[in-house]
Length: 425
Image 1 (cartoon, rainbow, N blue to C red):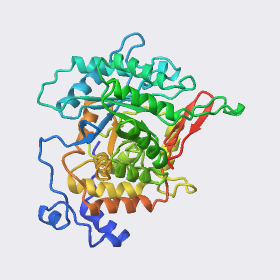
Image 2 (cartoon, helix red, strand yellow; image 1 turned 90 degrees about the vertical axis):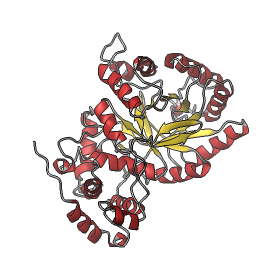
Image 3 (cartoon, helix red, strand yellow; image 1 turned 180 degrees about the vertical axis):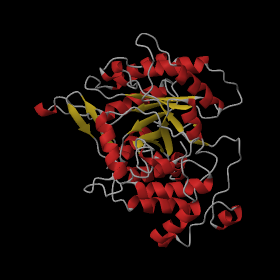
């Protein structure tokens, strides 16, 4: 199939009519001299790793999400596509893998079994990968899952020991609390005591015992992340990271305030759902034929969504005339495509680079080496301030905030008895 690329120049002209406030600031990056006049950051040297610090770790500015990783077999931990992915990523200085003890897309995971299998798979794949010493050292981050039966610092240490064993390491690179302690099945009986501070005590103990090199949290808003940061500091433990949902269309539920507060504290934000579950690649939009050429592979191009998820994603993509304006996110995708065309990048790479420009590190899901390579194409360059402002204006004009699809929400977790929620406040 032949796909059509819309000329960037015509899009720039259209966008500057729609957003005249940026007319004096925006310049197409097609010309290096014009780009310099626009104040665009100097290009990062080709071939050099585009890295950042997460605590004591040096990692690429794009991570790899593994929540959908599973074995192809019910009885063995094997997946040739993922094995190729891991080796390819490491050879491209892209070996930063984010996982968790509860990760996996297999039916066993859905039924509450198979704890830690993704950790074990990653460990095995890294051991088998043909990687030399001339690339960045692969880094694996994993997570502790708050659960009703885990009510003490000791439970964190025990879970950490189990993850450490599955990962086959003496010390875990980054150990994160997966979410605030919100799973309370007996709340209707008045039993809803939270154990967040016990969990902080637990990860501090793991740090001091040398079981982990760095500690982090997930889904903490400005208030809770500040409280955690200060509590850990009293134990002499730096808080390295906070993982939250964050994207161009997911900034208005407390996410942007959280990014700003974390930047102030020196806590690195790891951004999951950087594509808003694929919306920001154009794959769910009626504009998809114009959003990519034949050789473009977006990071979620082979994602497997439930019918309920697809229904919600189509509503965001095309609008419903009620909560989502007619046309959905098409105006934003057009703005992204204009910049992508001018820079010879994909729309997905624009979405990832935007997050990097905001001081966060996108964690992009991938299940093939090609998807990882496309994600890593977001490295080695930066959007200009004018381009960032243009994207934000286009996103804000939609008047929507992405909060997930189906039972996968940006501010909640579906558990056996219903949906438990947190807020980024």
